[in-house]
Image (cartoon, rainbow, N blue to C red; front, side, top):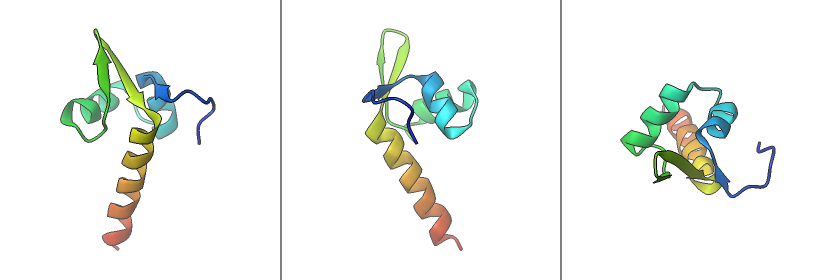
Length: 65
């Protein structure tokens, strides 16, 4: 799933993994749906936070069927 071994990802990397645009990524971060933190004006997203986000979305989809 991940091309590099960095434990901290950028918004651009998250966009590539999820196939979403930057605005959507920022919406997810600002709403708290995707956990991350800011250093100055730059968002950083722990890889495990992205993994949990994906797993949670998969569970939601599976339980709605």
